[in-house]
Structure formats: C-alpha cells, structure tokens
Amino acid sequence: MLTFKNIDDKEMQNIIDTKEVSDDIKKASENVLAIFTQDWCSDWKGLKRELDANENNSNIDITIFICMYNQSSLYEPFMNFKETVWNNGLIPYLRYYKNGSLVKDTNHLPFQRLIKAFE
Image (cartoon, rainbow, N blue to C red; front, side, top):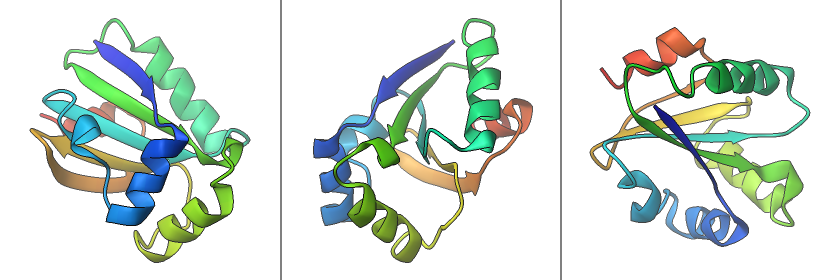
C-alpha cells in the first residue's frame, strides 16, 4: 500500500537548514520516498498517475512524501538548495529511505523500477 503525505514549508526550511529531511520523514515507515517536484512537470504528472494507480495494489508498503516546491513561498531558496547542495536540477527528484537511511536518489523512474529500491 502507498500512503501519501505532503512536505510543508516548515519541513522545507528544515531541509535547507540541515541539508536533509527530518527524522519525522525518514523514519515515518520502513520505506519512505520523498519526491521534490513542480506541479507543471509532465514527468511528475506521469509519475503521479502511476502512483495513484498502484496506491492499493503495491506489493510493498511505502510512505510517499511530496514537496510541490513551486507552490511555496520558499520556491527560489529551495530550488537553489536542491540544485546546488543536492546537485540535482531535474524534476521530479526522488530520495529513497529505508529504515531511516538514504539508500538512493534518482529522477523520474517508472513505478516498477522505483519500488525495486525498497526490495
């Protein structure tokens, strides 16, 4: 099963300040996927359709946190952070956490490849 949550401005500021997502996100469940994107992105829209289609029939439980940073007042500082500190200028940007530890980061992947990071 997939569980969806949002990353708010407070967490975005924490990420900028600490250079990493908080334990509240990393340790929300055994498998956590943090997605950083913008609402207009066609790759994001395709990924969102795949996630929604697999919400109840995924063979692995994943808590998915979504940061739609272009809708935030922190848009420019967060985008700058993502591109310079995390060194990723593409969207959507995905960070995979297993048991509280970062195991991988990628950009858009088809759902079946995405879940392999957690197996």
